[in-house]
Length: 332
Ligand code: SF4
Image 1: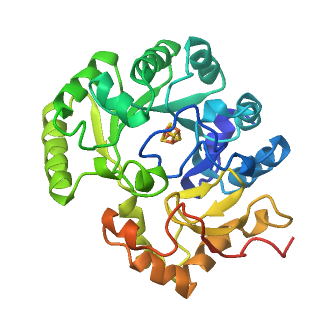
Image 2: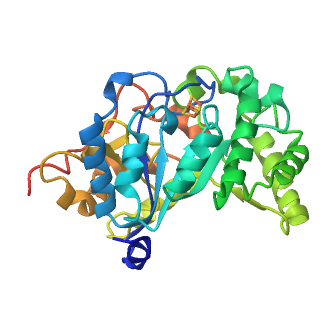
């Protein structure tokens, strides 16, 4: 199928995140899913391609390759070859640490349209402190330049507002402008994974978030004709979930985890089963509606009103336990 044919397919989902590995070459203090640990859970090559087929069966407009760090997945190129031309858009989220010019050219050649690079401040000390690795800021900047040179259509810089960078947002916008970045995407700090165990002291309090959002709004007004500035808050998706319960309305944010588990959202421990199990593919779409009518899921989701509620959830997101629903196996 050509890319043009793929683009003509009816799309049932805007975007599906496929976590292709839980490995990572960094150990960021805030990592909400604790990447770099639990390596034994990654899918093998054949299972990863099966998971990709499961995602394709959902007919998303965009498949986002996430992780962990996608460049740490030994099967990344094979996967890109498998996906090329079969979905209207492929995107990727990366820390940029290993993304050199050769990688940027490969991604462009495989039709990756959008790449989000994490850049957590205007200054190296802000980024490197959060990312736990000296030199990671410089490597991220080089990755952004390489992606622009390779002609990637949309280069996005993601920033996590925190106590280190919150007072230099305008400098951050100016740095992104000087690099030719297309979009700045700010995302909130979620206290799960290492974000709960290690990064928590850097999380903004409610007043800090209010000031941050106000500043982001001011900067969007001031620089909006030169660069798109977005606030991408998973909370909005979660807060909208009770309204979708009992309906067949699609979820805007689906995820397949690095071990093949289909998750109701990226950030909560609500798992619907192994997407590569026998018969699972025929049940993927109905699983979302079914999951939302489970009383335990409803109670769990309805307990969330802001990011500080993460601490009160039982089970904790990316803790030892999850809400495991077996909704995918059993039919062919
Ligand atoms: S936040 Fe991203 S780069 Fe950092 S450890 Fe997690 S997956 Fe790796």
